[in-house]
Image 1 (cartoon, one colour):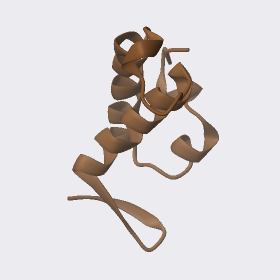
Image 2 (cartoon, rainbow, N blue to C red):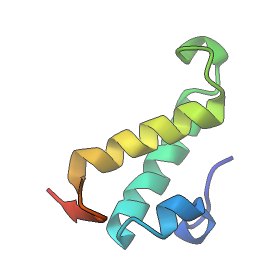
Image 3 (tube, rainbow, N blue to C red):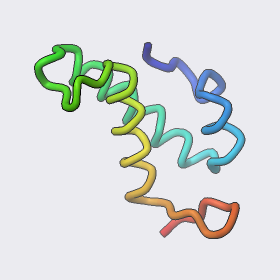
Image 4 (cartoon, one colour):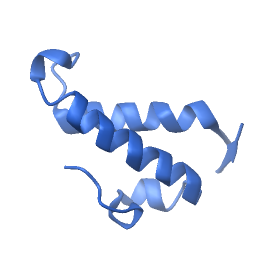
Length: 74
């Protein structure tokens, strides 16, 4: 389901990503949630939620990279 705020994001996102990265994650997840509503648009038999999380992480990784235990803006 779409996230109304970053406070609703999964714990592993909220506790590890900087606020800006969380905002990217939320926006990408919500967009993917709508984009991949139709099962035929998803790959590998993934659920709508799995696909949306993959898209969200991909969006974060375009702007941030993990160095050690910290996520830093590229």
